[in-house]
Image 1 (cartoon, rainbow, N blue to C red):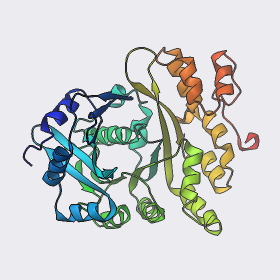
Image 2 (image 1 turned 45 degrees about the vertical axis):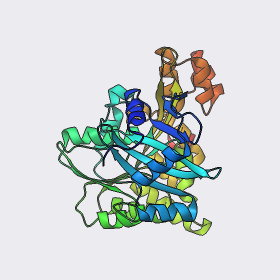
Image 3 (image 1 turned 120 degrees about the horizontal axis):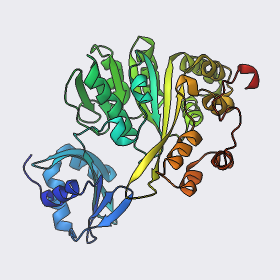
Amino acid sequence: MAKTVLNKLLALAVQNEASDIHLKVDGPAVFRVGNDLVDTSYIPDAAALQQFFEQITQEEHRQKFHDVGDVDVSLLEEDVGRFRVNLHRQRGTIAVNLRHVKNTVRSFEDLGLPNTLGRIAETPRGIIFVTGTTGSGKSTTLAAMMEYVNQRFRRHIITIEDPIEYEFKDNMSIFDQREVGIDTASFASALVHALRQDPDIILVGEMRDRASFEAALQAADTGHLVLSTLHATNSTQSITRILDFYQKDEQDSIREALANNLAAIISQRLITRAMGNGRVPAWEIMLNTPVITKLIQDNRLDKLPAAIMGGDSDGMISFNMSLLQLVNDGIITEEDALEASDNPDSLRMNFEGIFLSADSGGIIGDRSL
């Protein structure tokens, strides 16, 4: 595509490592840099945004925008990069949100993520969920896991995303990247067809509904590795979110299927650095050990946090232990750690050197659960 009317603004955003650009008529363009919103001196008028709209859309996009007031498109801006774009109406005028699609995937070390994620990415089959709230870095973590595989193993990796967040370059592995709405009609449809495309790994940008989950289960059950994201704050909530796709009388069989096919749940939160700019991840890692499998099968989800705390020898880690390490390393403050914790009272005791048996990594037998 030729340069759009916003070419210079988008170049400025990329130069300043902005993840998102927000535009509306007669207001300053705003960049999201890290966790901060930063005003720019550029103030678009209605004519500029209308011109941009016409430059990046086709007739079907314009009809959808006319009908529902929202449309998502992809933009490859000349000499700048790729963006996912949402166009919507705001007080009767066009407003635009753009997210920069990165083509450089950072390593676990660069992102401050544990090397355990590499071992998880080597899992031969099953389902791996990366969970967190919007903006918690889920897609970045998934990309790092896929690049870890790409640097080391011969795999055929199919990604199904809405929109594509990172552009991968084939190295040891080969990638097919499909964007919902452009390359395929839906996540569920693409998942079903992916099974006929000889994949080793299928990455699904987001697990949104029952149909997508059932297609992912089928893929895992036939020997594939499926990775996806969920909007959930921890492992327990992630499983509950999946079960909520189903009626009560269906949930026992789904718990059994999930217990048999789940490989791991990685939950992530971004915490402001104590010194300098930016944020760092804290995480909870739950691996599907025999104890975890039994708890899911028996619907004893309230016991999962204790099992995670006691599973450090298997590679599991609780949010509190992750937060404690970040505080001890001087990376985040105690105040921010307590605010991010699911159990701040327990974390406060950890700061004082007091640990329950599970906190200290002792192996918890089923009786104590």
